[in-house]
Each structure stands twice: as C-alpha cells, then as structure tokens.
Length: 276
Image (cartoon, rainbow, N blue to C red):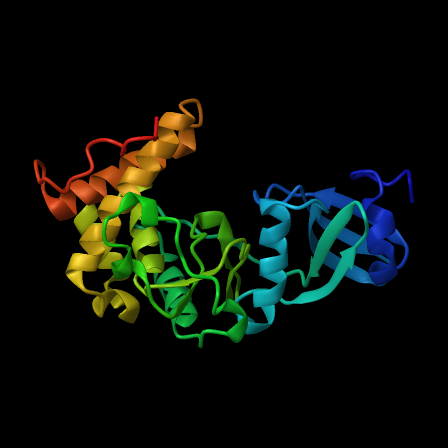
C-alpha cells in the first residue's frame, strides 16, 4: 500500500475498514481537515476526512463531527467507520451524489437551501451537544445572552457544504456544531447571500421562510449582525491577503449597516480593541 497516492501511512490506517485500497483521490472539500479524499477499495467507496492525531482544533473538530453525525442523519451523509492510529484520525462517510449549491441571485437552489436549514433547526438537541455552547461571537458583543439558546447549530453554511442531488439535499462538513439561538444559521446564510450579490433586504427575504428567523427577536438579530461584522472585519484585518475573508467582512458590514442604519452608535465601523 505504500505506493498508493496520499499521505504516508494513511492507507494502512484505513485498510482494516476498507480492505485492499485501490485508489485515494484527493478532493478540495473540507477545509477543517488535513486530508479529504474519495477512497476506493475492493469493498466499496467512501468519502474520508482525516487529521493528524495531535491535540488541537482540527482533531477536536473531527471528533465533534463524529459525535454529532448519528443525530443529523439523513441531512448529513452517515459516518460508516472511524479509524485511528498514533498518526491519524479518520472518518469514513457514505458517498453521496450531489453538486455544490449556487447562492447567487436568481439561483433555483435557494428553496432547497432554506429547506435544509429548516430541517436542521427542527432537530432535537442531542445530549452530546448540551455542553457545546456557542461562544464565537461573545467577545464581540456586550449582550451575549441574546445569542444563547438550545438549538443545534450547523454554522458552516457555504455553497460547497450544501449539496444538491436529484432526490435529496445534504448539509456536509459538520466541522463545529454548537448549541445556540436558532436564528444564527439563517443569519449566516444572509451574510453569504450578500457576499454573492444580494442586497441586504433581499437576502433577508430569502430566509423569511425559516421559522427560526421569523420567530427571532429583532433586537437579537441586530446584535448578532453587529457582532458578526466586528468579528469578520477583525479576521480580514488580521489576514489582509485572504480574499474570501475580506468578502465576508464586506458582506457582514453591509448587513449590519442596513439593519442598524449608517451612523448608528451600535454600527460596527471598526473592529473592537485588540483586533488588528
């Protein structure tokens, strides 16, 4: 197996679950993993996510994805096996036949995207997620309690992660599910839509069919929009050469400006102290 493509030692770790591996085809999906690949063998085919088996964020993320997976099927493809050695931790997923969704204005995919977010928000909070309180925006707001809740959140909403098939739609790459306010997932979709060309009002119109959105406190939405803009602007300033971060910062700022109004004292024109 040493002559197979792919990182050294990975094929050996996978082989107890796959049998003799005939091919490892790297893919571009899965930015939170060290390796994402389609693995073929005498026993079948799998989508594999693997990380170096070292303490830290990437390993923690893959562990969390494995824990949540039984609770988010069939919205997410099933994890069929887990492989681990001193060097690698890997999950083997069923392979689904779908294409990345299209978020641009006029896309016919938006009803399916909104529907899958609705299905996610309707899931019961699994016991395993009880301690996964969402805190990413806490340092960017004085009212973090407005962002708390008991809904299972997906949070990694982007076109490549919502796959459209002939008979089904999947949300893949559950890299960091959390527990929080139900409106956060549709709010993140709003920012993604603005980044692809929607005006803020039209983007909110797209998610108006989500019960998690229509039932949200407008004050909480305002607070999230402001906090998210602060966070995204901070990321963009920290990594000025990363184009997608700047695009997300611009979109988040546009949404916050629209919700809060230009010149509002709450409008996040600058990143908070400590973020450069």
